Length: 90
Image 1 (tube, rainbow, N blue to C red):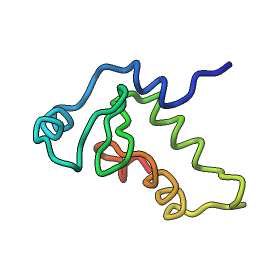
Image 2: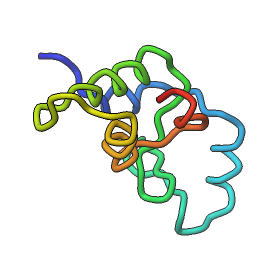
Image 3: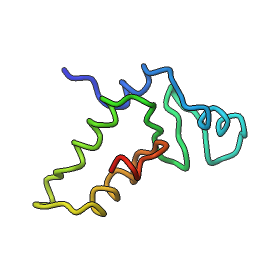
Image 4: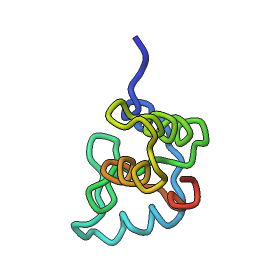
């Protein structure tokens, strides 16, 4: 059985410096729970090209849209995930 995105995120220990700073602020916008970091309620995806590319690919051709636009793809990903530079990657 293929390992899920969240399980793979838990295994990646690297974090950009800005994420570490956000977690130290101890506000309700950024927290860590069960090995997953949440930023504004969205799952932070660590700096891992393969993982981020997989998320982009999975949301590029959703089953409910025949030809997704850039904006649709961005909205699908932003519902659940966040990483620094996400807009540039999409």
